[in-house]
Length: 237
Length: 237
Image 1: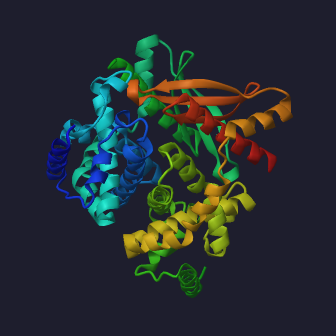
Image 2: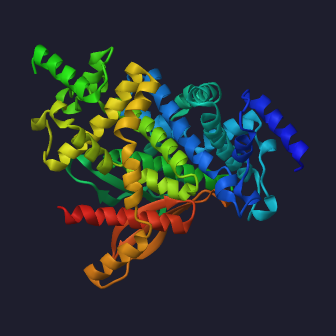
Image 3: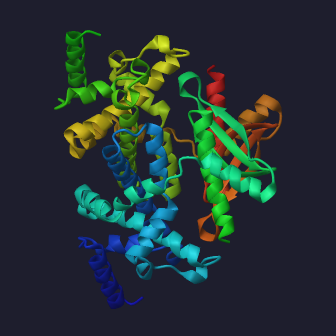
């Protein structure tokens, strides 16, 4: 990418994001996959900005859930948060926003490249852009961007959230194999009032999903959700 | 707890926190364990404030790590963040701050109550207080509180973080059983550039720990850390 082309691209991206950066190098980094700079990835790729953006988005999503659902339990909030703060949802938002054409990736350096890679890159870059806005423009600008671009999906996702993942998984596994899913406690950590259980759910001998929570019941529900996601991905392969 | 006593307590707690609340009911909720209000726990206990506070603290810790360690990789940052944002560290901070005497808990309603329960309550309430400050005083006040009370531990923890958990685990397991720890991939999720591996580490047939990451190597290191934590807890039992 030539320098002029690169600057034109960044200006177009700023217009798309409705944010004007003080330091455009930071925005450039937010759209740069490490395949483009294998030698200098730590400083020049989006990886650490993505890590920062993820934490910032999570905090805003949790606050939004806290304020929007005053009667929800902590368990309900945890489920909704994990549905929203997910690769799948972020990929959809990033694709819809039109981030893909701005992402700098060296496709020849990747093992595979397909629709799912595009999704994955869009999810990463959405997070990295939030990180970059936070560093370049401050917390209020990042909050505004998240409120405008990401929070609107919370209400949508909350309507779709499956409240009975174990029931749904049972139906699917029965249909596939004629057997029932089996749940097993794989690990018990912590003690007394602070226990953590890791539960796995199996279709025959195959571990379909795992979940970790402070009760076996909740860990089982999370494992069932994880298994449903596994099956969804297999199905779309 | 009488009403006057309750208000005196809250004033003392405000002095301790160096924060004056607009709505003291929110502060009261932040120190109330659900054992005190089993019927109305959703509205009156700290559970959802704790959930909010955890997300806010995480974002500030990640930002602090991002700014303090500009040459760290995303993997390094993930490890340090998970060491800081942990029950153990939050319990130590909460105990050191002196939160315990202010926590409202109905000990008779708990299965067990011991030093570890105190730790756990202090960790919960520290998070809940951050959530309450955020809601009552706004994001800047929450940021200041986290910067004052929590962020100073990041540098300390970073000095103690174990960079070779697999080596350390191997030594301990060899000493305990004369066998080497065995690592197994328990689950492979995602596809192509977006893989997730769940790795388990075993001492003989006993699953000591698990880790999830985008590479088998990183998942193994996380599993080793998890196993070291399991052994640490067993040892202190």
